[in-house]
Structure formats: C-alpha cells, structure tokens
Image 1: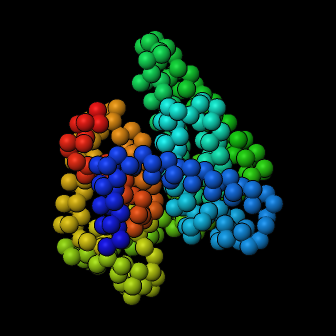
Image 2: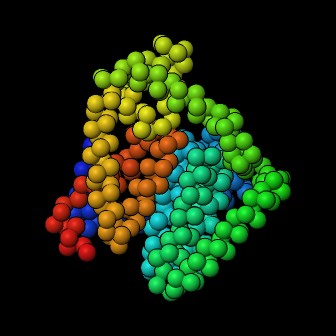
Image 3: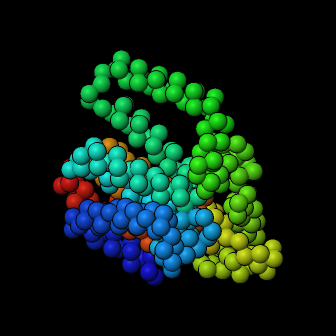
Amino acid sequence: MILFIFFELGIFLKNNRKIEYLLKYYSYSALIITIFSIGITIIKINPFYNRLYLVPNRLNGLIIDPNYFSILEISSLPYFLNNKKLSATKKIIYSLIILIGTIMSGSKTGFIILSVYIVYRFLKSILYSYKFNEYNKLLYLFIIFIFIILVYNSINDLIYYLNLYFPISNRVTSIFLNFNKSLNSGGSSRLYAWGNGIELIKLFPYTGVGKGNNSIIARILFSNGVIAHNTYIQIFVDWGLIIGISLFTYFIYKYFKVFKNYNTYVIEREILTIYLLGSLGISLDNSRMLWLIIGSILFFNNYMCYTDK
C-alpha cells in the first residue's frame, strides 16, 4: 500500500512540475548526510559513530543497509552533474564527496554501479558534446582506451596502495582480483541468494510465494531465510512468472518509449537507470524512491510530457 502511495506521489509531483524540488532536496540531503558521516568518522563521536556504522567498518548513513545507502548516494549524482546552475567546481567537489561516501559504504554493488555511471558520464560528455568535432571525439576515445589499458596493467599496484591507506576498500577492490569469489565473500553470498530465489521460482512458477513470504518459505525449505538480493528475481519469486513477465514487458515498453527523446527527463532517467542497475545486486522492490521515480517518469500525463519539451 505504501509503495502505491509513493508511486501515485511521483505521478502527482511530475504532473504538477514539483518533482524537481523533491530531487533537489533528495540530492542535497545525501550530500549533507555524507559530509556529516565523514566528519563523525574522523572524530569518532559516539553514539553517532555507532549509528552510522551498524555493520563494522561499513558506512550505512541513516539507514540500515550499506548497500542501499551506496545506491542512494550514487543516485544523487545525476541532479548535481546535470544541474546547469552549478559551477564546474561545485560539481567536482560534490561528486568527490559522494564518491568518498560510496567507497566508505564498502558496497561492491555500489562500486560497480558507480564505475558504470562514471564511464557513462565520460562517454556522454564526449559523444554528445557540441564542442568537439568527429575527429576530436575519436581522439578522446582513443586516449581513454589507452588510459584503461594502463590502469588494467597497473591494477595490482593500484589496489595494493589503495588497500594500504584505505582498508575498507579491500572489500570493494576484491571484485577486480577474483570477481566470482567476491560475489560470495565478505557477507555477500549473492550466488547463494540468487540460487535460492531461482529454486523458489521453480517450485511456485505461476502463483509465486506471495509478498513478504520469501524468507519464511526459504527458511522452511532451505533452512535459511536469505532473500534473492536481486529485484528482478525477487518480483518473480513474490508474484510468479505470469504477473512478473507481464509487469516487466509493460515496464520495458514504457522505459524505452521515454528514452526516445534524449533531451527530456534527463535527471529522472539517470536516477531510474542507477536504481535498475542496482537492482541486479540488491532487492529494491520495497524502495519508496524507486517507485516514486517510476511514477514520475514512466506514467506521466501525456499532455504534460509534450508541453515540457
């Protein structure tokens, strides 16, 4: 019920041109919480420090899950980086603060999503820039390619010094050394969780187990209550294949329909994409912000869509 309310709120805010205010407060809240967290981490004032680090050495901000916190952090970047009112200096400073907060969360999922988003921003700044001709674009892409090769060849040394001075990064950098092992180390157990989810889909393919019953049934059948840690698997587990496939088919149709016009809903699109990528490693089907963004961007009033252009 609460998710439907946020979904409807997203539609209402977009149709009344108020979504921009919410995204502003959402993004600046993430920035302020990160600055506060960095300060508390340095001076270690209790009980604030214990609240920010419910999981030892992993920053969770004001929520419980460090992985979800990292996604919230990264999803604040589109507002800052696409805000034409902010100077380049502020964009760099704000982005670095969010980067530090994401690394402090120790989230492998968050670090992967952040890396993908950074690459996307670089490519976007080159390929869609009016300042560069085709020759300059190819030149910059070639330089980036050479840079990636150099980083790849020096990855072991870079990881060594990063882990030496920032021990929390050891949990994140393990994905570069042994990706398959890192999925199941340090409390991740992603492959194990996904396997449980797939088995439940096989057992309840048409009806699903019902919303909120995953942990209960998994504990009975597999002697553990691990959830899927993947939004897409989780939806199939809860609602079954028929509802799940119908939902995703309609969602994909609306998603790409919105993306046809590159110049509209840029901030909302990037935030939604970050959440969708994060959904591969975290169960975000109960995320209020995700459903609000879905409501604001995919189910907007068509009249308002055209008048916004």
